[in-house]
Length: 299
Image (cartoon, rainbow, N blue to C red; front, side, top):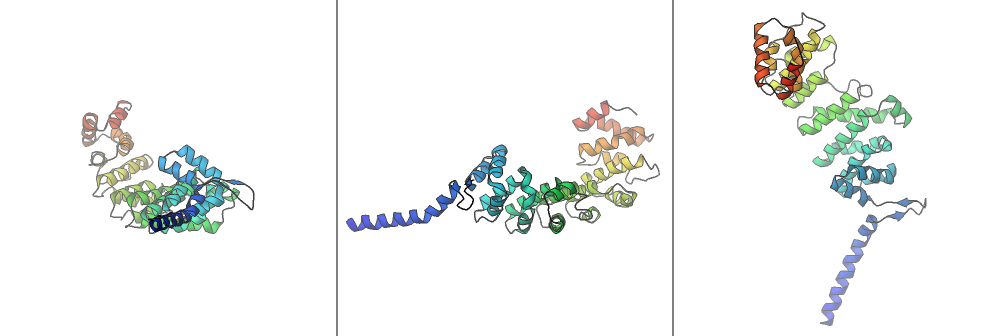
């Protein structure tokens, strides 16, 4: 009996000794070198798991860039994900762009997706003046732009991740000039990517041919987006053809309400009976946002 108790006691002591370092890392501590209080990483993780962005921002701010950088390399993926979510919420988050980049190519899908979104937000929210103010090296921003462009072009990547990368590049046009190539993405097999590529096409006439081709896309969402942009351009160039006609694009299956609304000025200004019939169809059966827009517009 005594032997059994002794063995059990030793086993418990062994488990406690193994768990002690983990628990110590979860507790607040004082940095022996600086003498400064260091809040635990657990605060960051718990705030992220609760979805409390205000507390997440406070936790990230208390940790600071150096400890957030360590959190990015933490063996606990929950801590890594929490750090990626918290970094954009602090002004100094842009300093961590460099250690985030390896995670953009992570084999862990969740970490990779979060890293892409974080890099996209940091790049998209930082103009040249802000990047210079934080002394972000040009090679770091260039590598970030290339990483987002690679994610956007990867046909095997999750759609949401690709769209986040495209949005980040679009928001960081000055910083990532030339990195986003929407004309190439128009050949993607994913309709959502093709539609996003249409929206990202430059306003210059050089993109007209790409828009005209997109207007003939087999997916109504893509075609309608192209029609909306062509309508805007026809205000400056009435000779610009649209095939198929705008009334077909406005009635296309899956056409986004905002794209249909952008086509309304052209349909209302048209004397083509087919355009008039399309307007009547939209007044009766269009999305509520489209019907409301028609009530506020006159030919």
